[in-house]
Length: 131
Image (cartoon, rainbow, N blue to C red; front, side, top):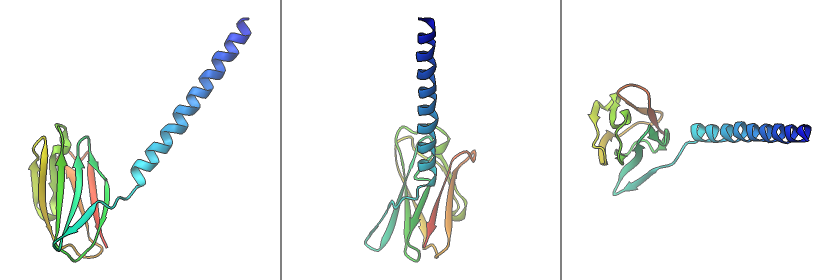
């Protein structure tokens, strides 16, 4: 009886560990490698939306080059360091409101340009690539 119980427990542990490792690796890869189209053009101005809470989402965005562009950073009960946003290429540095939207003028980026934002501690970042 003890042999059967230990075989069942061992089998259950092996299956559980396999599910944890295989399931965890899929979600990590898909979260870090996806590039998202999160922009829209309204009256000739391109708006790109990034969410700030526990980091920035999406981490990589693509957008059209050569048109006036504005970044909308949305916060929703954001109290971590992602609320302290720095975008050096446009001279932006601000602690964002815990909940709301911040609209940042990015100018008219050129093709091949990449605008990078990060928290003041450098832990979280995002980039917008212009084509």
